[in-house]
Image (cartoon, rainbow, N blue to C red; front, side):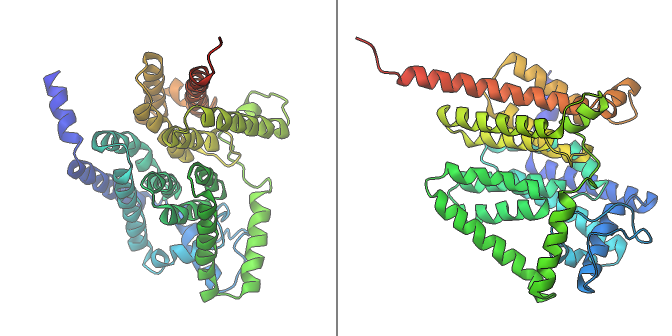
Length: 379
């Protein structure tokens, strides 16, 4: 027991965690350059050159990469510094920037040092998976968490910037904007958000005309609302895999009803923003048609944040450890039947739904307790 306590105390230091983040980045870079698993990076990189040449962004370029570019039209401008480097240099700069940005933002969270360090350790496995596919998901998680952290520290203007960036990376990241309504100056937050949206989008006008920018936005809205996004590693895919004849409209209606119900309960439960961001990080992935295994870094971020912020509870603790072990810590190809549960039966989705239910039940209990405490006494 003393040995493990010594190991834990050693690992849970910011300098050790920083070293681990750098090491997994360098190991991932070796894998990427050795085996060539860099299609996502090539998509980002080539989108910059298509953008600068005024070419369509949202069509296939099979001679350059497979799949499609789905990101916001301003993304090529933000990615431009990495695209201007040689491919291997750009990959190293991109994944190193990703891991170090996550490290700094996770350290900034208002949980206290020990809980921040635990979060950084638990999320490291999903971070490494995303680095191995040069994904943007770590940025989306980090920026959503930074939006929350800055609100907690009364820095609304900068919080709004990270909310805008969350939307501009992947549209559904904009769900973090709900945090605006949990500040006393919510109307200012909305104005700040509009400012940052205009400011960041105006960067496109350094390279293209307003008409081209509008055209790109129209094409982006068209592709993200189409059936070309096939991943559906979520409730949508679950329904399909189990051959349940449930129209997508009913899934969407259920998701929105669950969100609305939680927001109402959360308001009466005391409006704890840590619990709200935990719920949103899970909800936005498990009810998302565009979810894939790598996007679960956000859901696992919500699961971990919930575990670190809720009062201790045996059932919740067991659920957390099962979720974190099955979904992220136990590597792929180690246990055959577990991989089948993960990829054929979407066990990650089920476990994250159960954690979301745990948040829901806890919030409902708190709301009921507050209601009873505030109820006027009868004579």
